[in-house]
Amino acid sequence: MSGDIRTGVLALCLALPLAACGGGDERARTVEGAASPSSAASASAAPVEVEGDGDKTLTEAQLKMALLTVTDLPTGYRLGTVEEDDDSKTTGTGASDECSDKFKRLSDAEGTEAAKAEAAFEGGGFGTILEQSLESYEDEDVVQDRFDDVVEVLSECKTFSDTDKKGVKTDFTVGPLSFPKLGDDTVALAITGKSPDFTISLNVVIVRLGRNVMIVGQGGFATDVPALEQAVNKGFEKLAAATE
View 1 (cartoon, helix red, strand yellow):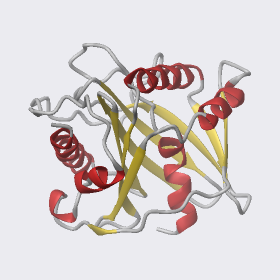
View 2 (view 1 turned 90 degrees about the vertical axis):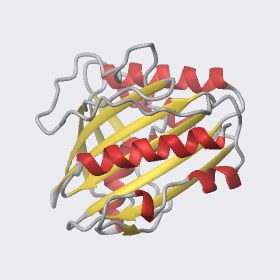
View 3 (view 1 turned 180 degrees about the vertical axis):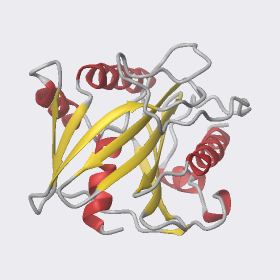
View 4 (view 1 turned 90 degrees about the horizontal axis):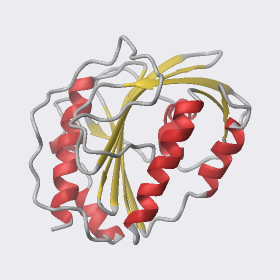
């Protein structure tokens, strides 16, 4: 998959790294009023048991040690390249005329993490990617507040546009993805992106465990829900172990 398409696919989930939910439900909370897409397959409800509670701020080195590796993924995945941030611009449309302003405020709030680490993989299918981001924060309340802010935005602004540095515009539509609740907060999203040259699909799961956040996005020209579930469960186990 080209760098431009990869950037477009991941623009939404990685530009809004704390798009997650809270509460004591046994499943991930979905964005208010969003219709469940037909591609959102149900994941296994088997609980993932971990020891660490996330009440620890991790260093960049510790986060890198907790990242997924090729051996954690299904057969056919290989190492990919983490793309550098570009100059793309994300705007929102929807029930509120303030969507674009809301996106800007969320974007301005980025970079408050104490440490961050990322990993990228490519699958056996054409145009398939899987990327993971781990973030650690000094203040758990800050993390929770940002979760709540993004849930509010996604509830009001379910369609987005991203224009890359070459001027190519991609329109995104977001809906819920069925996925078990992990950690303290979880959200699972099914995203479709359409540009003049391609249509892409991406499933994203974001999990908060105490002061720490994990984002896993999987998709491209095709999605692989079992691979996503395996990656999220294993990634969650490794992140929790790092906080013990």
